[in-house]
Amino acid sequence: MKLKYFALPIALLLGACAASDVPMSNNSFNAKIEHQGDSSYVKVVGLAVKNSDSFIALQVEVANADFKPRQIYYRVKWLDESGFQVWDDEPWKSVLIQGSARQNLTVTSPTPKARDFRIQFNAENNRPNDPTEPGQ
Amino acid sequence: MMMKTTLIRLIAFFSIAMTVTACSTSSPTVGSGSVQYGDAKAVEQVSNEFGSTDLQTIAESMARSLAQSMANAKEKPLVTIADVKNKTSEYIDTKSITDSMRMQVLKSGTMRFATDIEGMKSQTDELARQSQTGLYKQSSTAKTGKMEGAQYRIEGNITSIVKTNSDVKDVYYKFSLMLTDIESGTIEWADEKEIRKTSKR
Image (cartoon, each protein chain N blue to C red):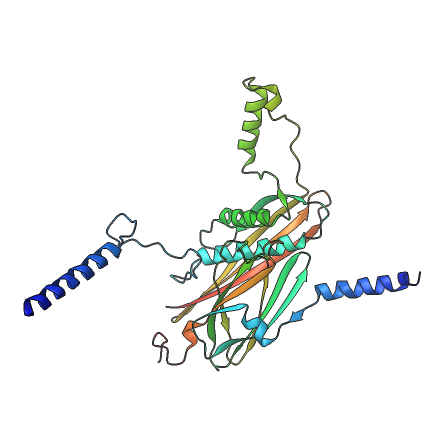
C-alpha cells in the first residue's frame, strides 16, 4: 500500500534522469569522434548527450589553444542500434573558433530512429607549420 | 647455364607483366576525365554569395528545430508552407530551401504537409480529371470534398547585410521562419539561422 507514496517521486526521478545532460568521460567520447587529420590547436574537450522527446541532443565543447581564430569542420553520422546509418550524410559545417576560446556546438538528431552517433571532426588546417596556411 | 638464367628471367618478367595487366581495371567512365564529380556535402567557399552550403545548413537547422518542436504532439500536425520572402539583394531560390526542409521534416515523421499554393493547381486538376471526366472506375477515383485543410502555416524571410571596404567584403544572412496556427492566428514556433561570410577583395 505504501508503495504508491514512492511511485510518483521515483517516476519523476527516472524521468529527470532520462532527459538530463550526460557528460561523457574522455575515453567514451573519443570513441564517438572520428578525427580527420590532427589538430594541434582546436580539440574536442567535452561531449554531453541528452535524450529528450525521442531525439538525441549533443553538445560538443571545443577549445582553441591558439591565440588566433581557427576554422573547424564537423558533421554527425546518425546510426540505429545496429550501427546502420539512418540518415543521409549531413552537409559539413564550418565554424570559426575564436582565439583562446571554448565554444559549444549543439546538434539534434534528425529522426527518432537515431540511437547512436559518430561526430566527424576535421581541423586539418590547424596543424602547426601547415604549408597551406598563409604566413607559414 | 647463362642461357637458362636469361630464359628464367624472361619468363618471370612476362609473368609479372601479364599479372599486372590482368589486375589493372579501367574506371567505368566515359570521356577524357576532365570532368569530376565532387562531394555535394562539402563546404563551398568559391565566393561569398549565397551557396549550396548555406542552403543545406539553413534547411537542416530549420527542419530539426521544427521537428523537435512537434515531437510531443499527440497527432502529426498538418502544415502548409506559404511564402518565404527573399529580402536580400541577390537571387535566392527560397522554394529550394523550403523543399529541402519539408523533405527532412517528412522523413523525421513528425509532421504532415498539405498541398501548398503552388501545388494547388495540379492537385485540383488531377482531382477534377478523376472525378468529373467519367473515364475512371467509380471505386478507384479520388472523391472531391475530402482534401484536408492545414492547421498550421509556415512562412518567413531571408535578409542580408552586406558591408565592403577596400580589403574585405562581409555578408551576413538571417533566415527567419515561423509557424502560425491558422485558426487562432497565434505564432506557435519561430526560429532563425544566421550565417556570416567574409572574403578578402
